[in-house]
Amino acid sequence: MKDIFNQSDSEEEILNRIDNLSRNSKPQWGKMDVAKMLAHCSSFQDIAMGNAFPPRGWLGILIRRN
Image (cartoon, rainbow, N blue to C red; front, side, top):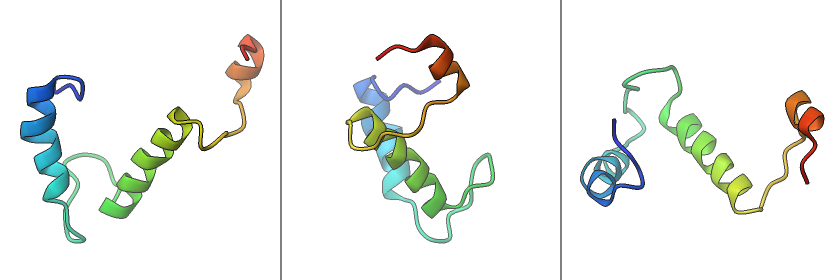
């Protein structure tokens, strides 16, 4: 399995795959088109960077770590 934290995987396959995306690219698995996939990935990055604060789910409320 490819790992984004492995530099050779990131440079060779992952970044090349992103660079080759176009409006007409077909998913290799799943049902998202390119725009939905990029929005999905960037939303998680916004959360990790502290730029978005989605509501907690029931498990987050149950565990309640701040």
